[in-house]
Image (cartoon, rainbow, N blue to C red; front, side, top):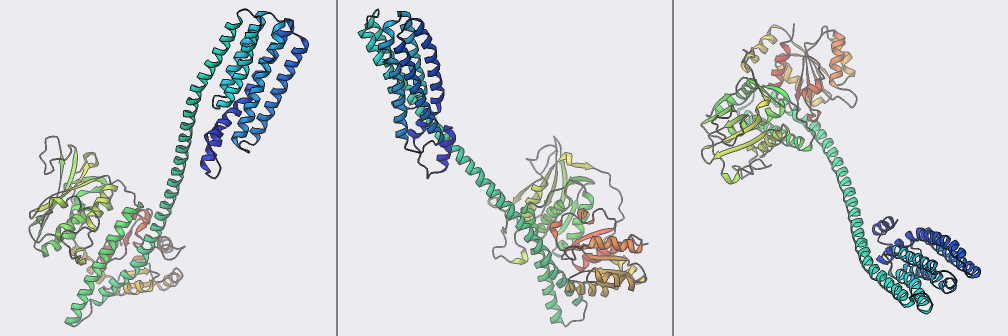
Length: 619
């Protein structure tokens, strides 16, 4: 009860609280059991005095007085406990001390009338019980000294005086013993009182600490809720930005691609080239910003899938070889046959950013992409590599990085060679994306560099995540073969494409690009126009190209399922979405066969490559 009230008063500073109030609380808390023990002592000593011949009048008066005082003290106890602290603590302490004094006097003064008529043994028992009750009073009032002094002195001093004035054997010795007992009790009560104060202060400090901890916990909970709300709002914002900004970028790229097929004057052609370059830069910067925002938001969870390293190396070579050769840079990719268990999208993103940086900041020489396994006795470029590690290196012979900047290059918006902030050289987010992607996959990325000699970036994984595999011949053709095959298919057979897109600008620009490539295109801007297109078609479309989110309730996947059921065949489909927060391609297609997923903005050449892959599945 003391701790509850103390906690309440500490938690509510408007209510007065003091050490004296806590002492009174402790006194009244123990007064109920003390009253009960006093009544038991009265009930036990009364028959003994009656049997030993005490005066009936004196005995009855003694018992009635003790009972009346005990009743008054109990009423005082009940009144205080019903509304603790209703009045000043000093007044309640004075009432309690007065009650203790009266209780002590009822025993010690009664000795003048009871003990002269009883035997010496009964007198000693009476004195012993009186001393025990003094000890009980001391225990009850350990935290309140006025009560201790009043209750103890009122029992000991009159009783010692009776012994000194009586004809009891050795009266002075008994009086001295009682006085010594009284002093001993008061001395120990002082020591116990100091200990009680120390424990009370410690209790107050603990309660204050507990309240502070609870407040800190509540504040942490509020901050966690605010962080979750902020993350939720950020996710919604990223989804809106991802979808709404990709739509006009998609339309602009398709319109520029259509315009490039027209005959233009040299000045107009140069202007178109600059517009296409600006569009590509805007797309790349947008993708980098959005990509880093997704990585930092916590929405992306790294998967663990088997990644074919040889195919990954071929993808790197096909993507960057022509760009590197244009700058006079040799590109050598040597990834062994095998599989690495990591997230395919994140690993591809990290390696492509590293190779892109190497091409961007090199003016000659050679770029190498190779891997190695660190055994116990293997000599490696990485002297600090742990035995049993699988490493993928991306090295260049470019400008290199000074040692003082090696710790900062993975920070956001850091470009050591682009102090003028030329946006053609990017935003300085590539290495930040690499680091965050590797952290999500539980991989380690590091760099070693020598100024004016080149740099080597290393992605390190545990060897148990690598599985060797014999190289199998692959039938995949290069980009030129795919392009030639696409042109052959279009020339020999009119390819019918059903294009579904609710954004009219994207729909018209994409349709123009496809028709210029020789495709037959049927356009649908909503689910309602699909019925009309089905009636106009005299056969099933060869390929379905659909936006993913057409409205709040309709998705492209549902339309693909409906069209396949309508024509009773598995029509190849391309699903295009502007919402990169939806996750992996597998989660979008939900296991549907012959469905590719592209993320806006989609360059025309990427759309053509996807169409070529889709047409491979035609009968």
